[in-house]
Image 1 (cartoon, rainbow, N blue to C red):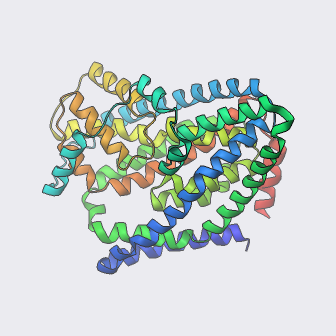
Image 2 (image 1 turned 180 degrees about the vertical axis):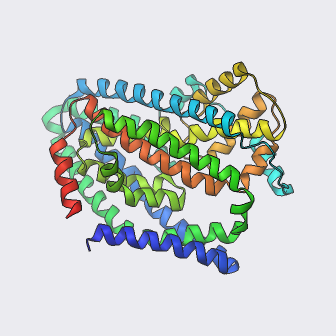
Length: 416
């Protein structure tokens, strides 16, 4: 068995064992959370230098600065289309399946108190605010906070400056090329700890909430995951067919980071490994290093779909009927507010609370969602990852840079 196959098996076994351990030994399971936290911290220490080095090398290494503008424009266009479709699908599913109708679960005082705090959380995410916030005042601070958008902006300017200096900057470019190789090897070492991190994260989640919470919220969980699956099938699979990339092959390629994203509910945990695999899959480094980090700011397909679904859920449990015009206005608002907020704890719930308050809708539904937010987050984070991996293939194909021979050889090698 290959090392990659062993890792997949170990992660999957850790996921299953974590669920049973959290169910049977909840008091001990909640104490396993530090294992998950330590693994996530190990991943976070990789991300900033990895993204910076790969993006600079991807841009400056090819020396084709003019191409950067085209790639950026095509990336944003695809992101906007994908997230808009996700919002519309969430709206349709909420109207057809009605997850909030007949819902009756008691809400704890602690949950209500947390929702009140979310109401006053900063919501400044207009287009102007987003553009201003994308410029780092200190790249060191941006790296410390894990602000991917600011790191990308600094890396682009740094790469352009290298191209402008020319041959004198060659030692810096060589150094960053070596840094790329080191960080990918570093990622391999960190991924060896993934099963331990997965076990700690999932067992603590089940131990804290109890296995019974899955049955109490079964309708809402089922509708959310059904809607996410529908997006994958109707949008991502169809997109892959259009660009002639086998979706099953792509999914098999990114199975490790996908399982990691699902079990930890963390996009950051899966990002380094996913970037490495998509490059092996046939997407050029320059595209992967630009599209993937940007995707975690502008292309959160799973999260945007969930936001419209959750907004209508909150209205439905209160017995409020929203007109089509109101629903479209909510969707348009979420289209703007859901951008540029990746990495904020409970980000979807914060945005949801702000949206409900803005439209005068009761926020009691957010307190209900708090009970299973971790479980729902596992699904939407996984779809975010898959969506961004598909996005890299789309942009590469759009630029006529996708290496189909490399993809076929990689899939053939993985099959043997």
